[in-house]
Image 1 (cartoon, rainbow, N blue to C red):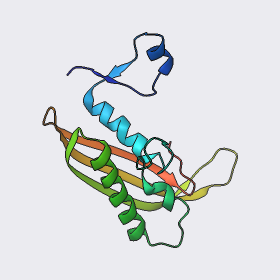
Image 2: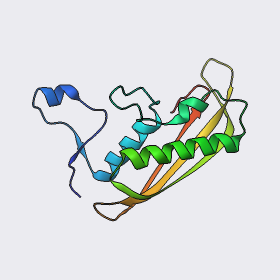
Image 3: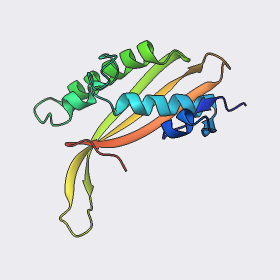
Image 4: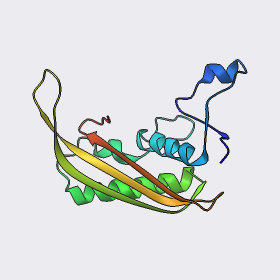
Length: 144
């Protein structure tokens, strides 16, 4: 598989100075892009206010049910992937949310909501199966 896509983190200095930038394969590029979608809030990207995901809208939501939060995340991420990631087809998204105790060095343990994402689809160019897994904690958003 060729490595025709820029990898993250993006090195704008290499591009500007006409130097070689690190490359990656299409699946890795799609995974990086989905990560950008999930960690961006709507309006953060000034040239396209539809870029992002509503995870930020539910970040401190302690009043809504877990099912409501899951539904908001799934719908928002599905719409964002459909609108911005044209290299995937047959996209499906699974979200699970559970409370988890996190140990922090030199501090008391914290209880946060762990959001686990699973995005499945087909890479249009190669017809290969695509699978992306990520988890992060909300209230406030963080990932390790």
